[in-house]
Length: 142
Image (cartoon, rainbow, N blue to C red; front, side, top):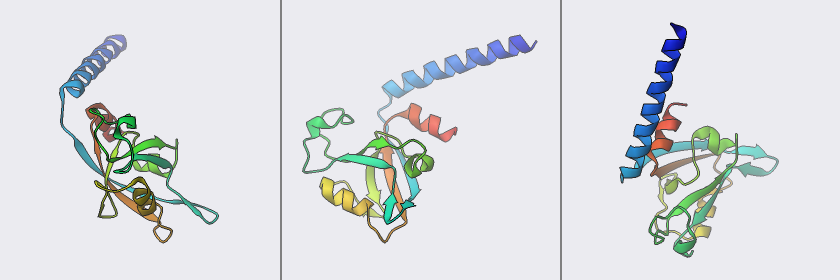
C-alpha cells in the first residue's frame, strides 16, 4: 500500500512539474513581489548579499536577463548563498523596480548602487518583478 501511494505521489509531482514548465514557457505574465532585506553588519560595512547589473548608462545587449536585449532596467545578477538577500527571498534575475519607495526604472547603475547601499538604512525594501512562474511557485512553497 505504501509503495502504491509513493508511486502515485511521484506521478502527481511529475505531472505538476510538466504543467508548470509548459505554463512558464507560454506565460508572458510578470509577477511582482515585495522583499525586505535586513542588512548584515560586518564591522563598519552593511552587507546585502547580492549584486546588480544594468542601468540606463549600460549596454542592454550585455544583460543576460533581457529577452529582447533592449531592457535597461536594474537586475539581480548574483545572490550570496544563505546571505541576507537569499534569506529574504530575492532571486537571480529579479528586476528591481523600487528601493525603499524610490523608482528604479530609469536610473544609472551607480544611482542604483548608491540607493541600495545607504549607510543610514539597516533595512532595504524592494519591489521586484519576476518573469519565471516556476521560480515564483518554488519560492512560495519554501
